[in-house]
Image (cartoon, rainbow, N blue to C red; front, side, top):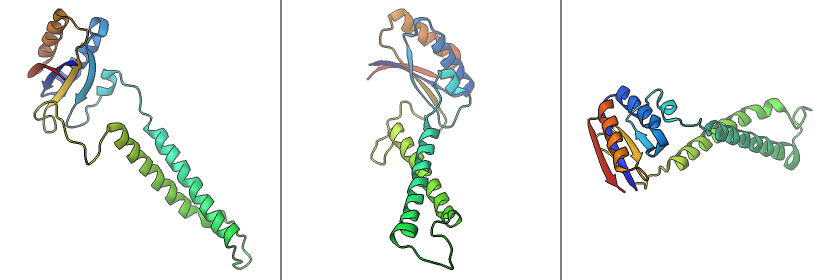
Length: 174
């Protein structure tokens, strides 16, 4: 896979380059990814990324935690070992509320963290592969896939990135 890596110092230049690369005719140079040391507001819209599904994972994890906590408490307090305490009912919603709330928050948070690490392919064993020097400190990098782009299109992309304010543009095969 042939790709073009452009390194930027300013986020406004990076945003201009992303918008310019997406506006290229035929979209032969697809944006692979953009690497920044901090969140750049408006970058996801400039890249044309769809919304995240992470809130749905959080909701599913929270609902599983809630259902599990209620099931455990009903099993313990009503079915397996019912105790008569002052004539109160065995299944009391107010008594089950704190544990249900805590389990909902715990499993929602764990599901969110797990889905984020799984989707991002992050693990303690993963080796970092920075695309450019300083991309974790102060530089921002735009990576474009060049498969199917002819020599004229490659030159046009190179000129577009330099005109947008890239301090370095290089082509590499990977």
